[in-house]
Image (cartoon, rainbow, N blue to C red; front, side, top):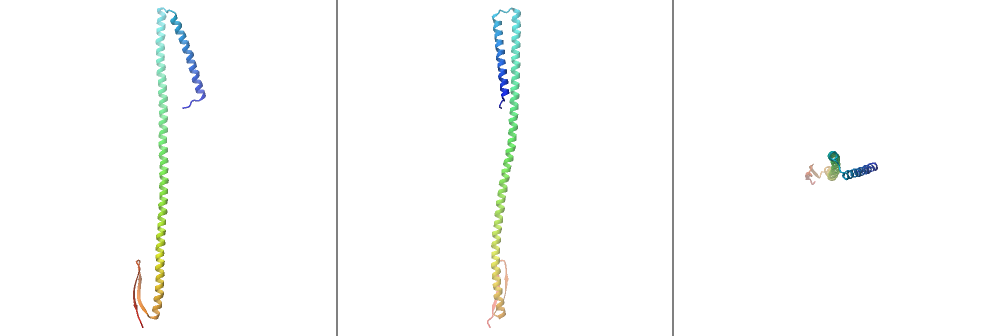
Length: 170
């Protein structure tokens, strides 16, 4: 996490104040060590030292609590971002799958239409050939009937043409 300039400046000011306070405490301590304390003053100094140790322990506990809280918040934020990314990525994959499915469906429909058109063209061509053959046979048949040369019957089926013919020679 990036800190702003004001936060960096505040931290530097706090560190400078802590240094000044440490120097003053050291000077006071050296001054008290130089003087020979009496029993009452030794008791006071011992009490103050114990209070200082207790204050340091309380400060350490509080700083640890702040650090743990900060780490917890950072971990929660990271977890939230990870959850969001999982959902966003799954949606992206779903969209991609849908696009691929639509594309393959379009291709399949185009192939089916093309196959149907080819089949229709082949059936129509076969039908037109059969129709032309039937017209030719009918024309010749009618010519022969009017002249009395041929007699017979025919039937058109799906597999072809069935004919019975009798040829009369006069």
